[in-house]
Image (cartoon, rainbow, N blue to C red; front, side):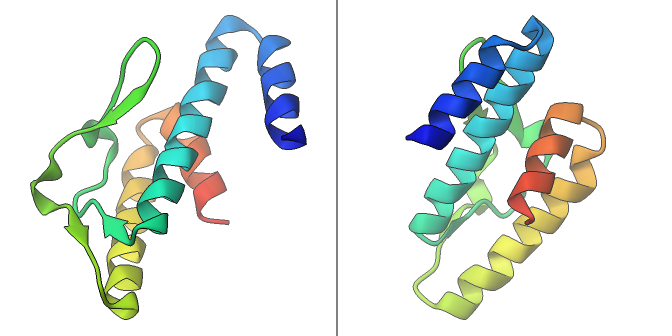
Length: 104
């Protein structure tokens, strides 16, 4: 609760462009955490498959998305997703910042 309040406060005190970047980063991190919770991998995670709308982010190109029953298959798929996201995020500053947070 405190962390989200601090993030909200820092977002409010930031310039409008930076506020949007902070919200995009937070949404991407939450999305990745939810996928991890259910052992789901995207299969083709890159900046062109993440749409940023006015108020949220949306994953596209879901034909490679998989639910993994086996932990080692999930870990391999998530590693692939994260490596691809980080590699392609260099083209998008918002995704670059979010992918750095996710890889910690």
